[in-house]
Image 1 (cartoon, helix red, strand yellow):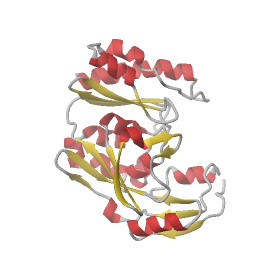
Image 2 (cartoon, one colour):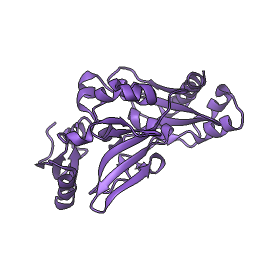
Image 3 (cartoon, rainbow, N blue to C red):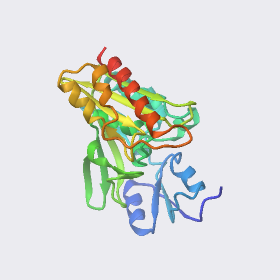
Length: 272
């Protein structure tokens, strides 16, 4: 389909993008475009203005920042997956980026666009939850940090204000004990269910993909592990507090059963 009419603005700096977001009605940021443009073609999204930030090279980087790895929001999935710093210091992020879409998607889509889109079926948001990542946003009032647990607020909604730009993602260094598993029909499809597991001293943090209106922490699983349960026993609580969708790819009941299987496998892999 053809998108609804819109205006187009190309921002040369983050400050220009912030000003444009505040000046134009129903303005949306355009980075790689692989989330927003399909929604516009279906007219699910109808922004009055697109503010293109895809050419802001200053927001494309990966660097070691002491106890964390900082990733520029406009870093392409391909670059995330092949970055040696991430492969060494936080391999779950590099691995997950390689699982997103196909090469065309990975060469255009950005990590910041993936998380800012707030799609509960996306791979990276649940990984960010499991890592307890920090998001850095910049707006008219300056910069602020948002924890992953507060960032995803509802379906396709995040804690970012209308005139804020996500500039950076900070992930802790996690070199041992992790797993990301997902089940889908084809490589290009969104995950029916996905599970991110990161081992901690008291058990693990577990993020769930496509099990509700937002990416979800599997709190029941985490509590069971902290209490001494093994992965098989803890995984029986994987669907607690979830509200999975029913669609042509699978019913809610199917997803509730599937998530228990994937959580068990992810925990066994993370703790091996």
